[in-house]
Length: 137
Image (cartoon, rainbow, N blue to C red):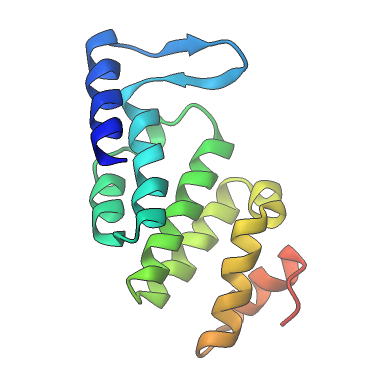
């Protein structure tokens, strides 16, 4: 995965600005490769590498609030895997602020919220997010 992601990053860098792809609204760019890397590193079991990738991007550079919200949700997963519960909840709330409908409807985000509710102390903010997302508390 890392070898292929590094190759994609090199190609994206070589191409320069965003290369639009048919049926893919975000296009292909160094930024979209890095977004993929955050998710891929989480799935590969290396949240520190995912966090390093997340710190290398500017969320304001993302092309839409939905993409920003999704990136924040992926970063929240990273914080959860690192045991940084407060950062996880804060990042989920930031994702919700960007695009509430995206955050409330995304199954992976709902699963994360549900997991947070049963895995440790809850806050009013977490319980509120769960209620707004339709996750039973």
